[in-house]
Length: 173
Image (tube, rainbow, N blue to C red; front, side):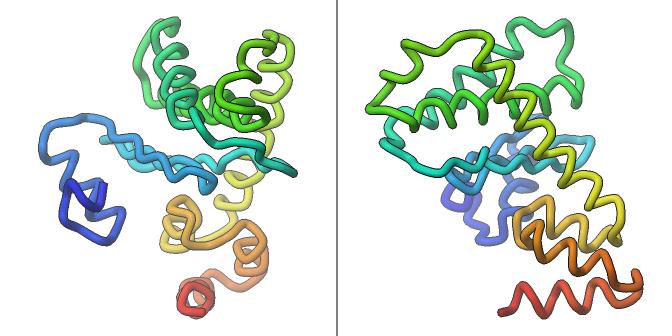
């Protein structure tokens, strides 16, 4: 996104790319998750936390397959549907890295996928409930991955008037 747009800031890069024509832009950030930008705003989904990564080969393609596969079976292309597609893509990518190349995907079952999708949604939901407790500026920083969930929890304890200043200090360090 940065290379295509010529912008270092990911939000500015997304805005520039969307100005080129796409209604929705999905930026994969590898182990740092996914950012999605649309006319409805932005959405950030973390990569599902794993204890070990065997081989990241194919993870991006697995994300794309899960994302597009989910959309192909969906009844509409609403923002909610796109967000669910991001979770499905992230979930399949997390399975992919558990073995060499695409080997893990060959043994994957629907119940395993459903279980991890549920866990991933729970993980994202905890982030969303945290976001609801902080100011809009801090929400943006969390969604963009500039502020960790742990730091966000600490900031959420502060009065809203002090949250942005604390967030800026955390991001600088």
